[in-house]
Image (cartoon, rainbow, N blue to C red; front, top):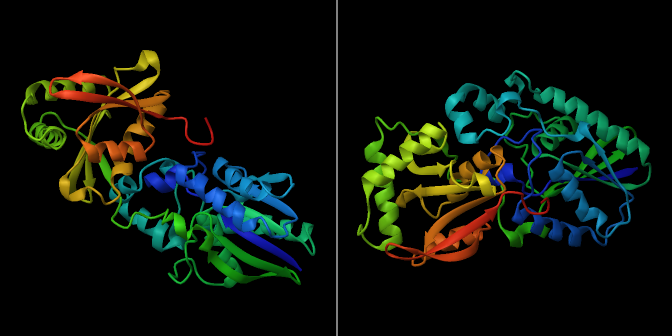
Length: 374
């Protein structure tokens, strides 16, 4: 009899920022690093004889929770990878759901019908992952093995082991960093326990934003002038208390220049069809020094403090990362306590004070290299 601890990787960027991860090799988040610590403590006293993982970074990092207290080599295989989602890789969920609603519905709710060019079907994932897991079990008779994989892949494995169809909501999506225990005996797996996350509960929820997924569209300067100015004006009031010193025409002309330099630099944000905010990036600034400049990151008041901020910030993070920038920079007003709290929580640090027209501005910077990797 072989015991398997089937572990889902800890929180990665795609989970936090609501992106299609697939085979994309993104970073682990700060919360993910905390989850690794909690998982390591949970497994410290367990007898574990071997550890395997998908060859992607987020699973290899998660496997370090096992090897921290167990002197074992990490064995990796691409057969334990997440489902490959073709052209969707690295796209935001909100955009995918809006642009291809029928295919997105199949991906989430009618998995037998999901098929995307250049990607995998759920059946293909289930076959390759189950074959890999069976090989691992057969290679370790009478032992206990930790196996680190991915959310969809684990769900495909559980469907094949239990016989529960993927479309059945009774088959859960296990949480990041959770443990599912399997037993291999007489040539078959049985499920011992599923989605054990007691060691993570003190850290809070890490997966789905219960409020929804943002999508984006490039600003149309011919149609969206009033929207842009309204957003900037509200951001100005939030920072300074009133509109003293606000120069709408100058800011809108700057946004037009940003769009002329990069058609994706200024984005309207939506929740479904409801406009919820704006991101304005100046890609002409900072390239010589390796940083990207965020001119405006804005959410409408009714959408603040609901978990949308990281999704908005992600538009800047991944746009500038694609441009090869090493960090993000922005200004925040000294008196704008809520904005400063958000930026600090998201990993920005203060570089300096600068004199603005209405008072002190803090120059803030966030590394784009990612925790645990740069």
